[in-house]
Image (cartoon, rainbow, N blue to C red; front, side, top):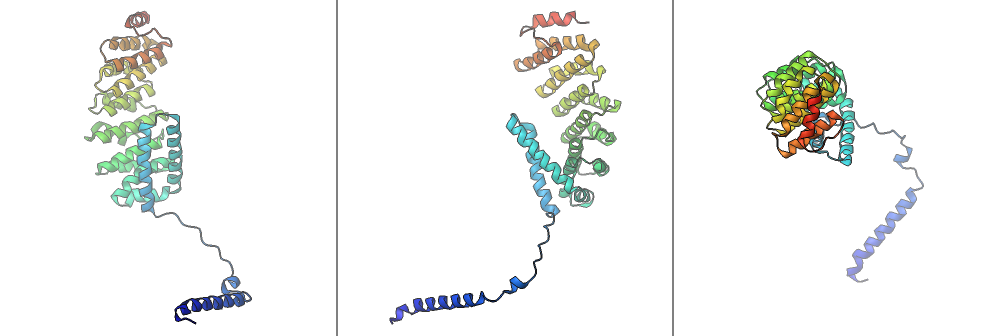
Length: 306
């Protein structure tokens, strides 16, 4: 046999030998076949550090979606993400509390916001305690979490202090968000309305807008005169919030309807075209009818109201 063919012949012989060994071995039970079956243990929860990294990514996507969702599909996707975040936060609530109270600073920040998705009012104590932390970002995330939790019985003093006294605009913005969501959950407290009224002159437009909205949500009849100047605010966001709250107050308190209508009509001539359309929308909602685009019929309608 030619020498060059030896490797091939050897390979075939070895393959045949392996087949014979395999065939003969089939007659005898293997060690695996005689060993009793033991099921694998369930996988434990993912390490808390990895959980927090993933949750922080979800939180960023949720925040972006809150600002950007503009159609039914995007809103549905946002709702699905929020349900998932609530399930995850609920399952790891105890771990999140440990991280908030004694974890590394980066972990504490994420945990503070994540606990808001737990829907459990027992987390309020540690979250409110975190409002006194020297780290501004932890305070901001705690305020965000308190707003997401939106428990109507949340003690307000720590949040009000941040709204009134914090030099950081993002902190005040998140404090206003927390108060707004607590108000939407049904909280009615004179201190809440008073703080919102004070913040109508805040340098931050987001704070002004959210506090204007609070006054409409709590239906503070005395806020009509305070909200009217915001119709001329530099920021459309604040002006629109004021217009909506004014209309809401006019509908809720009939004796304020005339004052609200006249404030809205008076602003029509003094604002840009885009804001004018917003004011007309508020007037139509208040009047429950449409007097058109011209100011004259609106002025006549408002003048007839008591």
